[in-house]
Image 1 (spheres, one colour):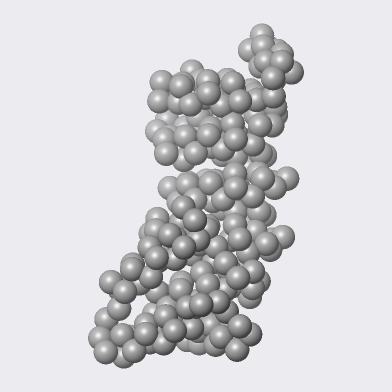
Image 2 (cartoon, rainbow, N blue to C red; image 1 turned 45 degrees about the horizontal axis):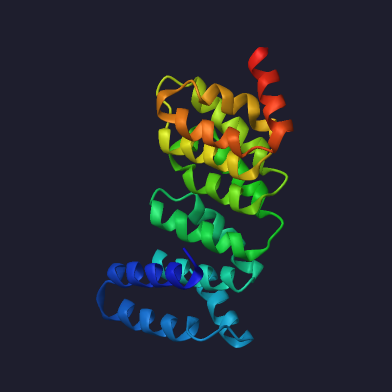
Length: 214
């Protein structure tokens, strides 16, 4: 999904959350702020939205998304909180903005969320964000998360699948052992095999055969 599509989805979802005439007026004001670019004065107004108490969550999300996509790092804390939200659409919106924010803290925060065993049910978008970032933290975090999921009695299959696909996309041969283990799980067999096939040519195949022989 590109930024325009992500913005449209967020705007429509926020519109449905508006309650009462005061929030409707606030919604209209925010739409005027985030439309047609973000000059400095508009950015400052959106930063105030993030800081003011009592604001509805949808207004903070709109402000943080716009600032994040514009590369304004003052949105970082709000976006990380939304990335850890129980509602998947908010997580997806936050991940999209964080991927464009360019804050060096993002990968570390996403890795902490993805690897937290108490938050596994909400790890899907942090895992996908780590894949998009291709940061030094990405492969270790996805590997750790997938290893834990494969060892669980009832894994969260969507998160496990996202880890498998992410490791395949990242193309790092350190993932060979855990992808080989994932291939033994019926729900992950085909995507794990596809991920292994994406690893780097002959060297990847040799690494895989070495892992399988141990």
